[in-house]
Amino acid sequence: MNILTGETGAGKSIIIDAIGVIIGERASSEYIRTGKQSSTVEAVFDCKNNDVAKLLEEYGIENEDNLLFIDREITVQGRSFCHINGKIVPASVLKRLGKHLIDIHGQHQHQSLLDSQNHLLLLDLLGSEDVVEAKKKVQDYYRQYRHLTKKIQDLEKNRTEFNRQKDRLKYEVDEIEKAVLKLDEDVLLEEEKQVLQNAEKIYQVLESSYNIIYRGEDTPSIIDNINKIISGFEEIQNFYRPICSHLDFLKNVLYEFEDLTSSIRVLRDSIEFDPQRLDEIQSRLELIDRLKSKYNMSIAELMEYKQQAATRLDEVYNIDEEIDNLKIKLKDVMSKLAEKATELHSLRVKIAAKLERDISRELKDLGMKNIKFSVNFTQQYDEHGIDIDNAKVRISEEGFDQVEFLISTNPGEPLKPLAKIISGGETSRIMLALKNIMAKVDNVPCLIFDEIDTGIGGRTAQIVGEKLSMVARSHQVLCVTHSPQIASLGDIHFLIKKQTIDGTTFTQVSELTGSERVNELARMLGGAKITDNTLAHAREMLELAKKIKNLKKA
Image (tube, rainbow, N blue to C red):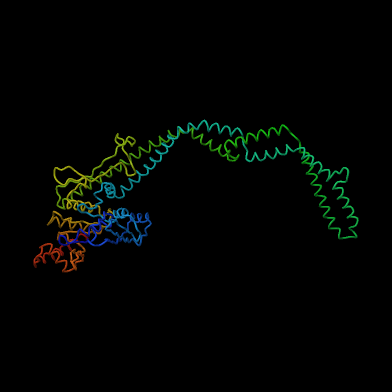
């Protein structure tokens, strides 16, 4: 718990403004010293936070051991330049990041708890694991609901188009199916066509070849001549050995020619001119070519297309049945979603009731006895929503609750949103009450309370200080105060004062320890004139504060 004190006009607001600049608040050229061209604010955060880590990753910023180095320069032209860990970023990134780093509680200052969009999240955080489990069930059914709804919408949207396609698909499937196509059939038929068209020529060549090799007519055949050569070689082989290898070669050649003549004979005898078969092939090729040209596809592609078209046709025939089945499933999912969302709502109502009691107790301790605090639940109605208690209600992954914290600061006044609170002191104390309750679940690590003591003193100021000290056990707290009771409970005390050097005014911040701190508390207690009594009172306050903090820790 860090206390910042100083006389009026010492520059406490400058420090708060500087922190606001760092977390993305409006940067005014008024913050620049007269005669200078720019002003720079720098800050270092030691922050281990998953939300911060995700943001840094989103913008490609290195996370250096959970340390954040942020600086922002403001120029007289009204421009500003922002850096996070050395990388330049827009001011909007600082604003997004700032929400996870600091809450400033003071009149007209940035306060996350005043934003109604955060109230549901804060309420759920108080519910701990029970709410997490209940929300998980809602989210599971919500995802099923969205999936089924979209699927039905897509099918219904496409049903007209499907029906329009039905006749065309049926015709195409029938046409390709009747053709009974076979893979590479056109290539094989074309080869057979060539044979039939040239049957006479083929037969003549084969017959002539057969005669030359085997059957010789006017002259001996090749086989006869080889046999004659073999006979001659056999007569001389016994007394002329070099001829033996050639004799073996000729015998092998003879065997090859005999096999060749056999094959030629089979081929020759298979050749016949069949005009009817040629007509059949021609007709078949014309059918295939027409289909290939019509669809601009090969036979393989036509066969695949037919399968796809048949599948599509099945979808067309079954679409109404599919939509009906999906609607039955959707009805069941909607019923379960409504049930789980209602259970989540009931759980939130119980948490809200406890929060209302706890806040009332806290505010009473803080001297705000007449304040009424309420958690207001509303739902958004939608004709396309889900039935909840005979009404069509819009549901999301968070359920159907819209939550806003309301408050009435004076008897007889109606409850209003927290953001409508006018008094800075009231706002800060209400925020302190909320923070004290939510200390264990609130993820914003640094809280700044600016003049939380406005309009209070004595015992109430003491209680405010004690509660700030409690919050400081789980958060870093910076508190600007004029109250000695609150200041005495700080763990670290800083003095803010103005100093003029060579005609130029500076605001200085220095840490107070020992007698310096006693003197500052005495000044806050007794004003400009410090007496031995006020010094003794200041020491007594510090001793009492030490005991209170030790007791709270115990």
